Image (cartoon, rainbow, N blue to C red; front, side, top):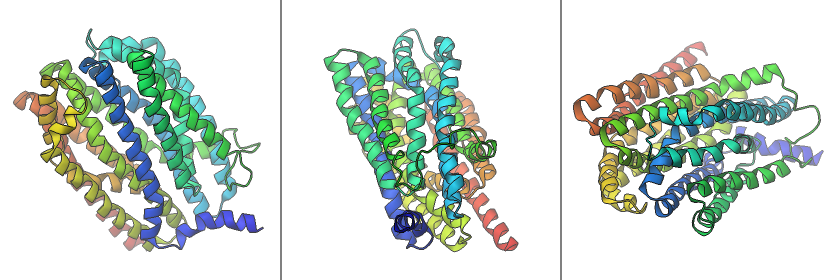
Length: 453
C-alpha cells in the first residue's frame, strides 16, 4: 500500500505543489534535454561541414521538410498520448492511463512502418520536389535512406520520452535524451572521419544513438514498481483512446506538417534566388535559431503535465498561473536569441567551417530571421497551452495561422520585391502577426471561460 501511495504522490504533487517550483522541476530537465538535442543537431552539422563540406550541409538541409513530416506523425502520437495520460492521472484514472501507454507503443510501430513503406519508392522524386539539384541530391539521398530505415526507432523513442515526462519522470526523460546525445557525439566523428562513411555516417549515428536510448526506455517501463508499466492486455488498439490521443495530437501534427510545407517552399525559393549555398545558409541559421525554439519547447513540456493535471482536477487558478510563468520565461529565451542573432552572428556561422559565400548569406539571413523573435515565445506557449488543456481545435488554428495563413503567402510574395532578402523577411513578419493572433485567442478564451463559470 505504501508503494502505491508513493507512486500516486509522484503525480498528485502537480495539484498541490508550488507552481513556480513545479514548473522549474518539470521544465528544467526538458529544457536541458531539448537544448542538448538542438546542440547535437548543430554539432552534427558542424561535423558534416568539416567532413563533407558546404554542399553536405546543403544536402542535409534539403531533408528538413521530410524530417518535419516524420516528426509530425511522431508528435501526433507522443504529444497526444502524453497529454491524455496527464489528464487521466489528474482524474485518478490510472487504468486508462495504463492502456494509453500500450496503445502508444502499437501506434508508433504501425505509423513508423507505414511512413517508411510509403516514402521509400519515391525518395528521389520527393527530394527533387524539395529543391534538390544534381549536386545536392546524392548527399540528401544518402542521409535520408538511413533515416527511413530507422524511422520506427525514432517514433518509438520520442513517443516514450513524452510518456516518461507525463508519468512523473522528467529527470529520466532528460537522461534518455542525454544518453542519445552523448552516443551521437561519440559516433558522429567515428563514422564520418575514422570510418570514412561521410554523410551516411551522420545518419547511422543518429539512428543508432536513438536505439540505445530506446532500449533503456523499454527497460524503465518494464519495471512492475512503476505506476505506468508494460503488462498484458494494454497493447490492443482501443479506438476511443486512439481517437482521443490523435485528436489532441492533431495540433502538433498540423504544426509539423505546415512546417514541412513552409520549409519546402523556403528551400525552393532559396534555390531560385540564391542557389545551393542559400539553402545551406538557411540550414545553419535554422539550426541555431532552433536551439532557442527547443528551449521554449522544453518550457512547454514542463508546463504540459502541470496544466493538464490541474485542468483535469478543476484547479483553474493553478492552470492560469503556470501559463503566466511559462510565457514570461519563454519571452526571456527568445529575446536572448534575438540579441545573439543581431550582435554575434558571424562567429556562430564560422563555427560550421563555411566558405565566404555561404557565410555572408547566413550572417545577413540570421539578422533578418530573429527580427521579431522576442514575440515568438508567447505564440508558442499559447499554442501548446491550448493543446495541454484539451482544446486541440484552437491549438490547431493557431498552428495553421502562423505557418499557412501568414508565413506561406509571405514567402511567396515578398521575394518578388526584395529577392533573397524577401524570403528571410517573411519569417519575422509572420512571427509578429501570429503572436497577436494567439494573444487575441487567449483573451477570448479567458473571457469565455469566466462567463461560463
